[in-house]
Length: 371
Image (tube, rainbow, N blue to C red; front, side, top):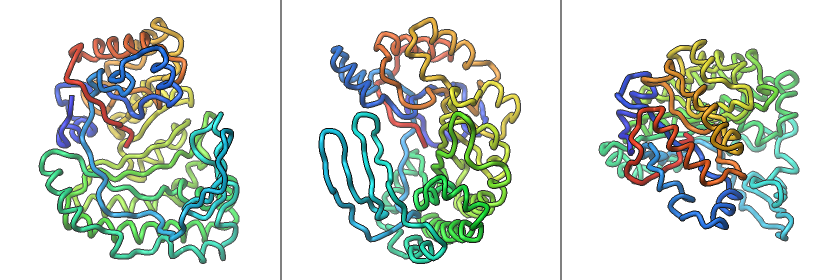
């Protein structure tokens, strides 16, 4: 079912819209697509449209807040085993094709505060960041029920792209002034972009990508969230709210639960994918945080690898009554993994719909809901 923006926002804000939401956040891994295709699975099931997933139409507003580097990516070499390149941040990268889908940086542009000052202009505001003509067209889509979204650099994610994870964590203690200046630069531009965008088209959702946690927990603790995240997030969220924003959503893999309270304190009110294998339990976290934050995801994708009995056990736990009537968007906690049979996936969809009180079949369709 296609949800309009008003109903979707109401659901995220814990209003009872008369229906639960069941979706796919990311879709299948590329390897799984190959497995299903080799097994003769119909294309409309491989692309997920056959399953009639819930989704909301959305558009990314035409206002850029990230780096403008002026660096043209360069392909250095490409073999069957790996790809070497220089990316848009000037980093040498390596993609090992047998084990990864995302290139890994081999070096970074920022090692010292002086390095940061040399590239600070990447984040400077410029009127060319805002496409007013495109925004006028997006306003028309908003009026027809499309959800509008604007994204900002992550408080962890963007410095990590500039420095690497280890250097960033050390910088919290050895170069806090540099990190603070980075986030102030991001905020200055984000606020000015939001002001110009909002004058033309209302903003429904502020989105930030962080991916700052693993199975052992987040790489920033409560102290770092309050010192670095909070001034940045709060300032940008206040600006977005002035132009209609109701949702502040974050994407962060891994165990985010140790800092969830601090993130809520920064203004966050929606988060995904809430991976159980990483330590997140939406059943228990809802009891702890109540209606303070909407969860998207939370169903263990790995259960689907072990067949119908494992799927039933997982859904009987995750689809808990106190998660109903708003504030939960039920979904797998990331991409559908390889090794999942189409028969098990069909069973998962049918059982989930039954337990959520949804009709067994609806109009075909799917759109990525990871935002």
